[in-house]
Amino acid sequence: MGLCALLSDELTARAIQLLTEYDPQPPYDSGSLATATPEVVARARELASGG
Image (cartoon, rainbow, N blue to C red):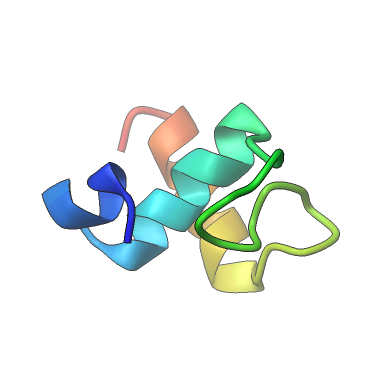
């Protein structure tokens, strides 16, 4: 489990991974829109808009 998940939750950690497009050896498989779940995409949009 990554630091973001420890500080918040797994959904937020996955959303942050998607926003940063982190994909070399990710802790989650959410580094692109092709692999992120709809829930992760929604959370990423929420985080990007300041929510």
